[in-house]
Image (tube, rainbow, N blue to C red; front, side):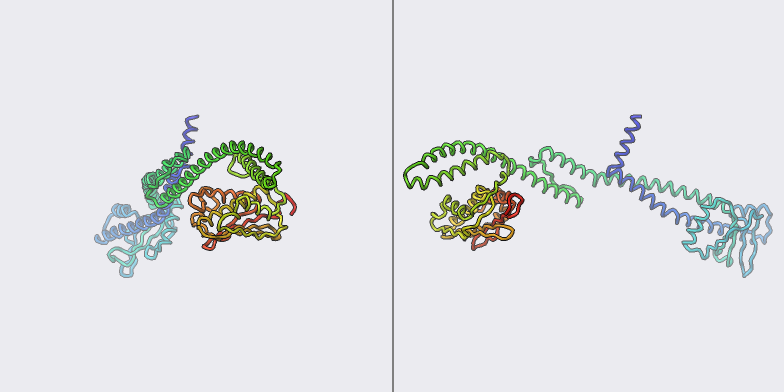
Length: 476
């Protein structure tokens, strides 16, 4: 029982394969074609059979006429038997003559005139003979051979005709089955060679690549001669190349993240010590020190917070922002002072932000966004070696707050525009990593907003920050 079940499973599995289905379809379509040919072939066979009976009957009648009708009844019966007919009537010189005759077993059931037969009538008559299994007497009319008279008419039984048609049909079906089997086998091996084996090769390459996608040696090399399969191989090669590159990039980022976490850990300890000394400096009675100390403490506190955040999330994403009301202009001025942008030779900082404008954001994260954008602007100006300006403006609409950061630098290179917010690919200057813009983009997106490049040409570059007023966290 298990053996039969296994055999059944194997057969079912084969029929579900591309080769198996193609084989079955080939056999089915070849047999269908043969069936469509079968009916016209049967009709043609019946017509030839009847014409042969007329020709033999004419020869028999001419033999009788040559002897002036002086033949015995036995010879007449033999002539009719050889012709396969019951009676022979020949029309000559407008006279209808019964040349050969024998007793009629039944009345004539139908008359067929082969002189006026059309293909449609021949098909219909052939089907009628095959369907009707009774033996009938029929009359057949036709033209004599070699103009030996104007018309020849025979009477014949249908049973021999039907049997001959059945025998011919069985031979046709057997031949069709043989042709179908040979054709299917040839097509099966052709499909195996031209389609199935290349597809199996692609599948094997996919499985091999899946085991070690970071191994570039396992990327498929297109070799198929079939256009569609080669296009599929080329598409797979492109996909595998992109995936391998992305995995290598991800591995490098993971290694970099581990290194940054270690550095942040040690840097936090150093900054914590520096924070203790800054707290002591803050209590100094020196007016100048007392004025500078709060800013120093704020910078060190921000650095410690950044190190702790880096150690905390441990993923390639920023923590969720803690939203609160933030006065925008003082925050921008703090960035300018902390980055010493106003003290750079040849660099002018212009701030166009209403004094009372407050935005809802995480102050630390927004500080980092502005610092990254303004630092990039300053570096772009310094790279030109000429005087320039950094312009920061802000405002609001009914639905959002907006902040623009621009410069009068040379604009971004094409490579930086193509990968503007992608780490390690969107660097705007030689040697730059592009991390600043990538971090700024992620932080703004974490607020439910967006960071976009407004313009970048020979007159300068401008970025625009959009912060939504309604996010479901706080009332605007």
